Image (cartoon, rainbow, N blue to C red):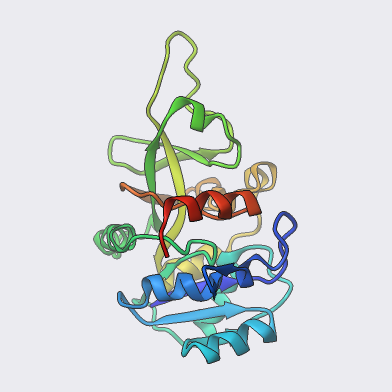
Length: 239
């Protein structure tokens, strides 16, 4: 099951999930990009998004306007859908209209590998980025252990190259997979101190002593957080 959280409010890019990408709303373009892989449900807090989803033939569910994170919205949707504990749920952000199938497949394969490991709550992905790219605080960096389990995520440049040039940082992609059981556990945690400081919800898992399994992917996709991001994305992709 693929669930796309589609919050209508956005401080940096108002109503971005409905902004046309080509001639199709962004959230619908994202849903179309992944719909051949699995069933898709759009989880929103807006009647307008519900109406547009129906117009394009996608199922949607209404969720609370009070959620502080996309994961919490996905969890409410999964409860509404009454998904079983062993269901694998992939959380795809509504601002990823150019996400490749291979990325979702790798994230799915990774959580499937750990589906019976009680310490691994989620899986996600990263791509190798350059030193200059790593300077951007909007690109989240991750460091991993020898088993590709996440050690930490930060908007800062990590690891910090104190004594020499370092050119292969791991840029985190905001795609997650979990079993329903793992998602329930994630959402049972209170918002954590590190999560609040970095404004990165995945740190809630690590700060509570659990793990996120990572996988390296090659991708040209990136989340669209600003109008400038959209302009840059459209220059790369022919619709």
